[in-house]
Amino acid sequence: MRLRGSIVLIMGVALLTACAAQSPSAIPSGTTTPSGTASPPEISFSSDAVSKVAQTFYDEYMSCMTTPPSQAAGQVGNWCANNNSQESPGFPANLEAGGVSAAGADPIVCAQSFPMSYSVGDGNYSAASKSGTAIVTEKFGSGDLKLTVKLIKQDNQLVVDNIVCPS
Image (cartoon, rainbow, N blue to C red):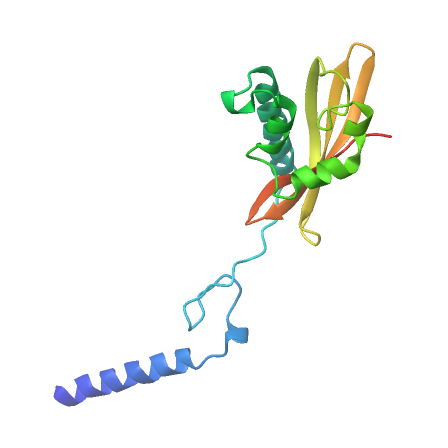
């Protein structure tokens, strides 16, 4: 009985040693390596996820502009544009680089007045570039305006990185 227990113990140790000696390159993606770290699989986002982030961004911005928080006093437009939970850290600089605010337009709605309504169309995501786009259609009394919302993957989530106004 004692011999059988020793054999089982030796086989168990040999099996564990063989597993620990396996090279990390032979371990499938998303599994734990012998060092205990995991290699996460690449995340790809659906067109619905892209559209939802863009929609949430615009809903939050419009809500902030119509009912600004006390912290925004005297700087509502800038505060709401720079304090959105769906934006990347580079968003304010990217938005400013677009230049429509110099012409007197709100750089997020791409116009001097707010739209009567807006809708976010289908989005798309490229796993290769880790970025996506969504088209927002704003309705004004005189017609529609289509603008592009650019999103990036950051910390395994999508965030708005820029808005491109039509020329």
